[in-house]
Image (cartoon, rainbow, N blue to C red; front, side):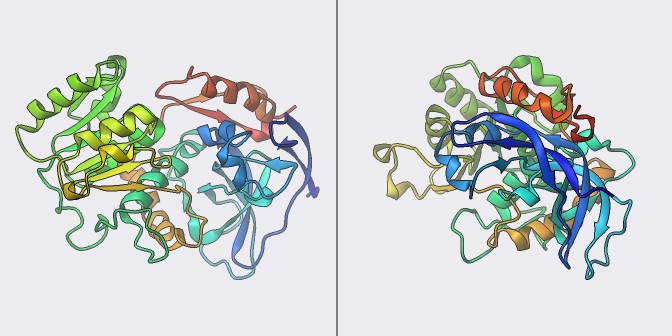
Length: 355
């Protein structure tokens, strides 16, 4: 095969996205080279252009992309779980060789999952980042991170029953992360599972496991009042904020009962004056990527089960919209994400269709 490919580069901080040539990397002993069939767009991909997230970029020109699905092209010498031709989904990382906005990339074999026959490449690419964000926030046990609730995972003894009959509140249920938070809450047997979203997404979110959908346009006092009714006085011990804007973080903190847990998917900006240490509320933010050393073990546990979860419908992928033009269509897609013009849908690029 040729050792060059097409890739989408960010030329500099606050720079432009440009399709260019890149070398096709060779896999190390524990890696596989993947022909990227589908790559999903995420908010971090537009935020990384010029924000605090730019700190993740080691150098320019930079290739982004955190979600991928494709076909194994080459396997490293020590890889025994995959062979050439396997269809896999995986998460990209902030290194050019590991990113998914290109036609070929590397991924450690231990953090991949085979795609079952009932899931398309496009659907599979919608899963990794959103699901990892939820799983790592709840279950990562690594002692080198405090960005986790350290709950017992559903694959461990007692994990699937610890929250049975307890209410969960998920802010932003129609977002990609929110949809996976609903499904994990269902897997954990939370009840009721309450979420905020536009009413037009009621059928979708109910199909994923939500029991009550509150109109996201309601003012916070009205949402808090509805929560009191829906939980019938049962303390709300678990709140997951999949949006994590300043106002939603405040709502999340106010909704949690004393001693409860709050997950925010962006850095904690809850005003210090709102926090009362006597309430005993825990607030956790999360770096939702399984490539970090402190998230790798939990990531491997997730990927060991992900094929089965997808095959049996425990986890359902996002709805997808395929962008035209392969990699060349990504910049317009990112502009739509930044402008808030995408709802309940994951935008997908197909790198092999790049002109």
